Length: 514
Image (cartoon, rainbow, N blue to C red; front, side):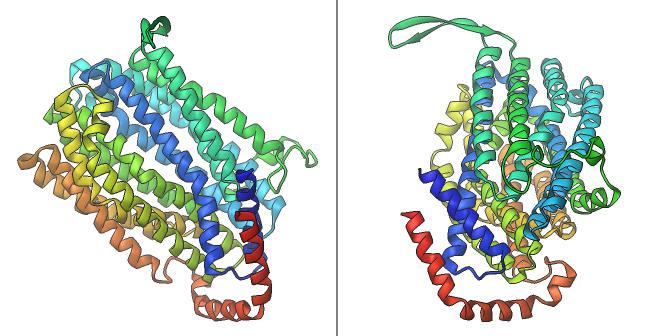
């Protein structure tokens, strides 16, 4: 019942936003909260999935863990490129819905589906071709090359389903439905853990409550981890696309008049807009992932224990910043619909509220990370050397969490506005100019701690420069920037003229919330 109430509140407040109505500070906070909470839980569930996967593989041994760690950053590159293209389409969906152009939103949805699927298939083929040599190029030793190559090959095969997951979830969020993709992400996590548990380990005896049971297993090791995750994506993506096609609302496709397969053929104007939004994001992800790969190359000479500890620490730390990404999803939706409705002042206000919430939550998560570092790493690996190296890295990183949250949510707001070039350049300058430079300087004297010190310094610097940009008008499109000041005064005037209706809205919210 509570979930239904929350959904009703967010839908009604979004309709007020699209109708040009003023939202009080309390309503703004309520809207950000109701949109962020399901997304945060979904992000945390997703990272928990990778956490459990890593823990399962970690218990196979250091070499098996290192074989995944060595190609992990390259998989981020694949995910970043596919995610950038998906973003280019679902941001357009948000703008169309904000402008109440539902038919145009459905057209973008269908054209985006075709384009993303074709791009992901091409990327999957490229991954299959290079999988044999990739671990060698990254500096992996002979003892991990075979498993690393197999893991990357299998993940590449499932790339089309992964981009469809990004595209489908993004479209639903931009339509204001945070709940459905969150449920899908949670289902993905549960299914992935179950499949991996059955595919990674061999058939074995398990003692539960004094009762010995025979647990079936395929004993595929590292390959089982990739297959379990891949099959989980297949099930969830098929379900999500079916929900999108038949759900009620502006994106419903099955209920509209059938105009033939040509409606799925991408139009040049739609693709051009998607590339205008997504290309800076894609280039950024590509160069950022190249930087992460370069970091892996820096860490590789430190040995298998350092590679495994670095990979595990990244997975563990990502639990802390997933709330930031959940709030970022909400910020993209809110800013995107505000821009579509030409509510420039409200876009800035909602972005600011989202940033403050992210910094507070990730500051708390940083404290948990610092004091729980040993326990977290102990779950992921039984080997003390890996635990010690990873825990030391996590304690260094904990201090950067609030500003990292600031950067994450600011970027989500800028994406919602459709202005992605400058933020992408800021990310790249910070990563390559600060993190890589410091890592090269510190790794010789500090080892893995030096690499993570460089990361903490860079994330703090990134948060500062993004916060400066947020407080300017420069992230708004040019035509909106010119009217930002007048928008503020006009919306303030609107607020005073509609105070009675706002009070009524607040009273309704209070009833729904209780």
